[in-house]
Image (tube, one colour):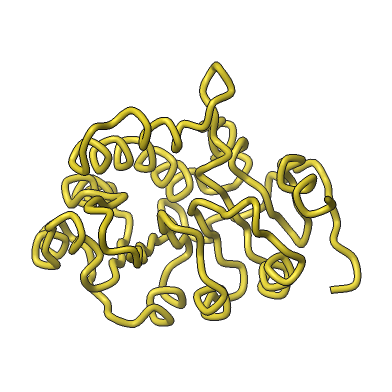
Length: 220
C-alpha cells in the first residue's frame, strides 16, 4: 500500500444500506484461542435475543467451550454452528471476536466485511492496515470505547470483575447493544447516531484510519 490515509470519519448516509426492507446484517462469532481465560464474549441467552430480532447468527464450533457453554446451547438459542472460519466469514456481514483478529483470519474475510474485536494497539503495523484496505474492511475496536472518565470500558471489565462468570456477563452486556445497532440500523450513519460507542470504536473505514489514537501509534 503506497499511502496510508488518516482521516476523520464523516458519516455517509448511503454506507451499508440494506437492500431489502427489514433485512438485517448477519453476525458471525469466532472463538478465542487462549484456553485459560474461562470466559466468553457472548452468552447463549443473548444469542437468543439476537435471533428473536430476526438477525442471522453464525457461531464457530466450540465457541463457548472455555466458559463451559456447549454448542447445543448456542444451537438451541437459534445460532447456526459452523466449524469453518472461512465459511463463517463468507456468510456473515459482521464478524465478532474478543481477541484481535489474526492475519490468517483477515485473509479469510470477504470484501466489505465489518469486524468488531479488541485490537493490539502497541503492535500494529502497516501490513495489518494493508490487509484491511485490500478487502475494504470496516473495523471497530472494543478497546477504544471509553467511559465518562476516559477509561477503557473493556479494560475496566477485566479489572472490576472478580471471576470468569462476572467477566462473561459484563462482556456480553457490553457487546450485545453494539451488535444490535450494527445489525439493525441499516446504515453506518444510523448505527453511530444510535450508538455513540460505535463512533468511538470505529478506526478503519474506506481505506483510511479514522481514529487519531491508532494513527499516532502507527506514525511513531
